[in-house]
Image (cartoon, rainbow, N blue to C red; front, side, top):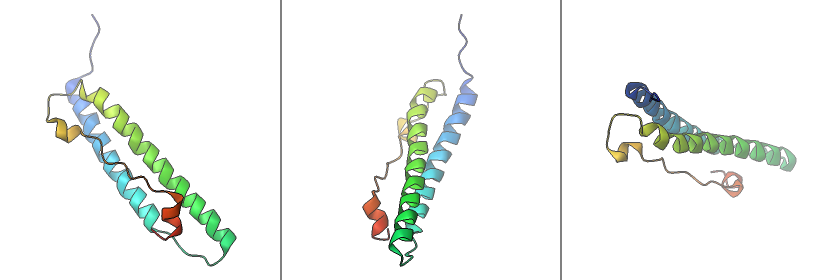
Length: 101
């Protein structure tokens, strides 16, 4: 007989995934808002590219948490589905960085 995960541990993991999604979404906004205009084209391109990579990494972490949550939710005690809804994914592009967003 296969054992199932402990529902209380699954619920705790879901809470941590929700917190992670909130933190990475906020961090992504902070990164995109931290654009510094250097006045040097080459340095500006390097900075813009780096900030874009950081934002992409944060989006990927949030997306991974979004993908994992429904699987974990199957083992957690029943709660309203709205509490488990994936966060909205912000689709920022390099052009957002270039205009100082």
